[in-house]
Amino acid sequence: MADNGDSWKLTIPCNKAEAEAAPLADAPEEPGWPVIMTQEPDPDRPDDWLLEAYFDHEPAAALIAQVLALVPSAAGMAPRIEHLAAQDWVTMSQAGLEPVRAGRFYVHTPVHRDSVPADAVAFEIDAGLAFGTGQHETTSGCLILLDRLAARGVAIHNLIDVGTGTGLLAFAAMYLWPQARAMATDIDPISIDVSRDNAVINHIPQGTGAGELALAVADGMAHPAIAAGVPFDLVVANILAGPLIDLAPSICATVESGGYVILAGLLATQADKVIDAYAAQAVALDDRIDRGDWSCLLLRKPG
Image (tube, rainbow, N blue to C red; front, top):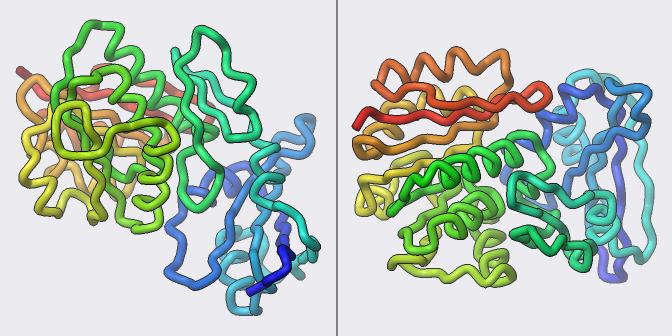
């Protein structure tokens, strides 16, 4: 572990699809796993992207190989590793993340704290160890669907954000329905720690009562706190298409009659399979947003 502020950066050329998929990949339970960022360096070459992995120590060959495995086209590539002496690399990476406006919401990192529009509902989310800064089309699409649902006058009393990442979608839902009981879960304990910290930063009350957020480490819907909280009138799950399909029966079983489900983390080409899996549970498509190559779905259980 570096003790002088030094860090290392691994840069891997990749294509757009790989860049979009990499942040959604489950991080191995590996000590020293890096913070991973992606960028499109040249807008005139939209399929040429870079994946950048930032380490707070000099990475061993085995760890480098694990990161390279996130990019199939990098097979056999000689990695480019830079030693960054005494630099605040998290702040550097955040500086490259521009704020995102999605409906009434404005999501920003600390370096853009002073740029919040007067008419926006702002959330400050650090770029770091959990997915969900608002940058990805899946996250911003979910924010827009939440905004649309509230604009209809739908009342939500009990909600859960499955695979919460940073807590952002739960925070947004709590703003829209401030008296609702809310729960946010993730299979990754680090994500729950990050969500807890972000809740403090964004003044989100934590607890199990109305207007409060309960946090739990949970694999899918299998957790005693989830079982104790059913039924939900809103389930948000921004994960991946495969798990969304596998979880369809257990997610739908927790939704009360007339309740809603927001699903994301799926490519547009995967949307029909996900829709079909939920239709088989009598939860039907109500609205859909396609952003880039990604789809976000709003579904409803009959009342």
